[in-house]
Structures are given as C-alpha cells and as structure tokens.
Length: 303
Ligand code: SF4
Image (tube, rainbow, N blue to C red; front, top):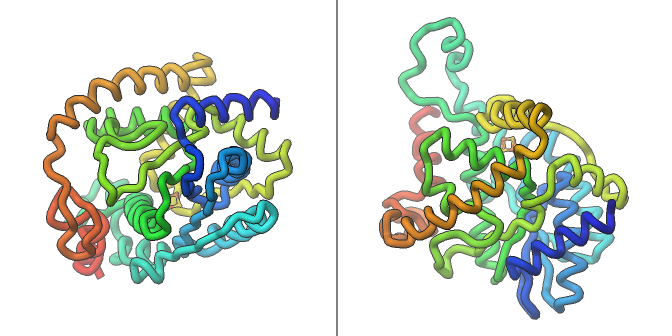
C-alpha cells in the first residue's frame, strides 16, 4: 500500500512538474495528516531534485486545537531537518481566530435566531471558516513570496477537490473553480506564489492510512468551528453518495479537470478584470481592497 501510494503521488508531482531542479519549495504545514504526508513525500522528492524545502505553518489561535497539531508539525520538521517558519493570526492580522469568532457572534443572535424563524441580524454573519481561509491564504502567499519560494505545496486531497468543485458550482463561483487545480492558478503574477497539490488524486481515507503506516505523528481532531462550515455539509453529502456509488469522488475530480480547461480559457481573456494592489496592504487584489482587508474592515464595524 505504502509503495503504491508513494508511486501515485510521485507520478502526480512529475506530471505537473511540481518540483524542478534547484527550486525553493514550500509546504503549508497545518500539522494535520494531509500536510504531514505532503511534507514527508516532498522532502524525498526535493532531496532527489536538489530543491530546497521549507515548511510554513500558520497558527490561527484556536484554543485546544491548533497547538497540538503544531507540536506534531515541529516534531516532523525536526526529524526531517526541514526549516520551519511559523506565522500567527495574532501577529499578522491583529486578532486570533477565537477573538474573530467572538466578534462575529457578538449579540448572541445569529444561528439560533434563524432556527427560530426570526429575522437574521442586519449585519451578515460570516462563518468562522470564511475569515480563517481568507486570512490564512493572505499570510501564506505573503510569507511564501518573502521566503522567495517558487511553489507552495498544500495537502489538498481528492475529497477536498470533490467538495470544492461542488461548493463552487452551488455558489455559482466559476472563477474560483477556474483558479483551483493541481498546479498553479489562472493569473500568472510574481505577486502570487503558485500552489501545487501533490495529493489531489488521493482519497482522504488513504492519506490517513498512509500517515499511520509510515509512523507520522498524526492526531485526529476536529476544529471547533468546523460545524459552521458549508464544507462540512458538502463533505457529508459527498461521503454518503460515495458510499452508495463508489468512485463518485474520482468522477467529480475528472469532470472538474475538463471544466477547468474551458473556464481557464474564458478567464484568461480578462473576465476577472485587471490585477491590482490592495490600497491598504499592497497585496494583490482584483478590487480596491483585498478580501483580507475587506473582512478586517467589516469586523471593525461589528466590534
Ligand atoms: Fe479554520 Fe474553519 Fe479550518 Fe477551523 S475548520 S481551521 S475555522 S478553516
């Protein structure tokens, strides 16, 4: 199992040229099984390609959750002798994720009101994951650029690809689908460090088995905010369908690859508008304010 698992991942890395000789490669290391397996495999590949490997972790500040995972991330980096950089929401954004969630829920209304059929609050409440995802991407891209990385590998697996495909269809966000993928995005800019996903063809269950069999320091825990996420509902749905119709996740991924080709050509023709710089943080953005600064601004109003 371990041999075939590694063979499939390495084939994906070769096929999409995720590592080239002498490059500087980053791995976004959350400390979960997917990112640990990605680091472990990328370390082997980078060694053989004489590429430099650096792990980047983001501490969102989620009490009782991220700390233990970061401990495992540090342990693996020490074992593999990989340089490890840790960035925190508190330092980079000004607030921990727990503080962000508190602001978001202030007033004690929101979900419970909705469930009782009352009017939703005037200010639209964002799920914690919306903030978390935007802030993490902002930090990772900035850190990867400052560390002069050529690529940044993430631990997205087949389940993530199937869920993301359906979520973007359900939200009618085809541009997000266009920029998602195994390797790189649709906008080529030196401001964006291209992302690569070596595990994108591997089901989540197999990543978990691989992590256990190879003795990676894994801890299976769930973020306390995960239940708020739309992704959680989609994950449940996809898993149920997969149970009844095995192979569905692969089929969604294959459909996505076909759709992406068409979408990439549409958006390359300029449908996304010009890439600008956020007037506040100077990070790349398609609007005056980037999504990170927009959310920070919204938080100020709710605070
Ligand atoms: Fe962040 Fe949501 Fe993931 Fe928790 S589940 S770490 S809040 S994106």
